[in-house]
Image (cartoon, rainbow, N blue to C red; front, side, top):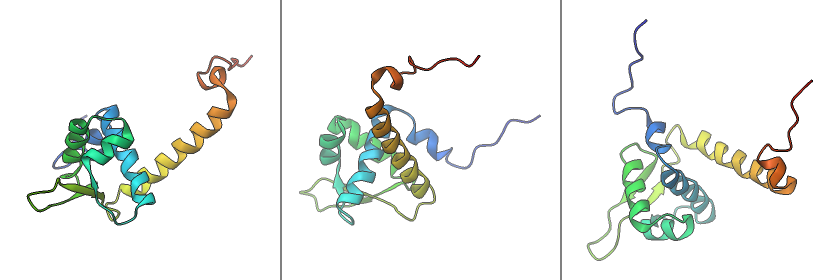
Amino acid sequence: HSPRRAPDGGWPLDRLFVGGGTLRVMRKMVKLTRDFPGTPQRAWDVALWSGVTPQGAAKSLARLNPLGLVRRRRPDPSHAPSFWLDLDYPLIGPLIDLFDAERAWSRRVGTLGRREATGAGLRQPG
């Protein structure tokens, strides 16, 4: 049986899930898009709110841009580039749903306490 052929440019989620920093940047871009619709965000601002370094946020946004997950606004020379989610990209809706489910789960787990959240309180059947 032959190996699967990757799409041209590779699998988009391989680049999204490449590391915790990129995932935090994407999660924060979703939140910022909700909080400030239509407002492009600078890497510095995303870094401030996501806990990623400014360089890490810029690198993540630069990685996500050619995939189409975010779009870059070219600023005048005196300003930093800014980015916004491309809400028309086919994977954005499912990713937003995934982040929403993650947030709901974390709220639920937060009320259960640390023991249950780590699985230490789970009993094996039988």
